[in-house]
Image (tube, rainbow, N blue to C red; front, side, top):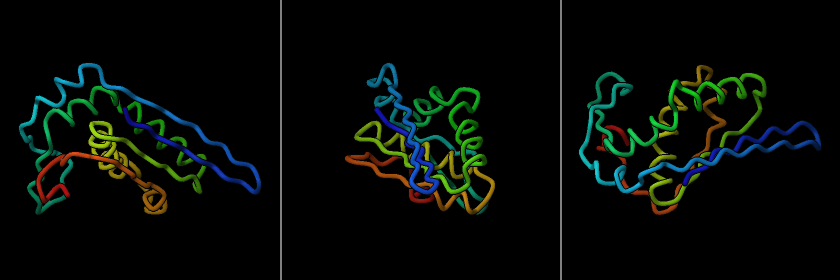
Length: 130
């Protein structure tokens, strides 16, 4: 289980929206423990990502549904903060999601508004991904 929280503050008004996601077949996500190439790795790095965690997140973000919606919300609310959090497997998915979200946000000002908090998160890749 992992969660995205969008918070928009204007004066004394605060709007928070939550998106919770649960991956079906969590055991199968955990079992696929091999490392795969991470295609969005910056030049000069050899990033490897946990196959099961990446496939689990990708199944939730079909057609870039999560990242596209976050980009729209971030564009409409430039001061909004995006918080991604999860525990255990959800922490791993939150960490994978944070890489994808940071790479999908174009403006540096948006990137500074993304926060990630995980609890009991397993390692999601090699040192180049970290």
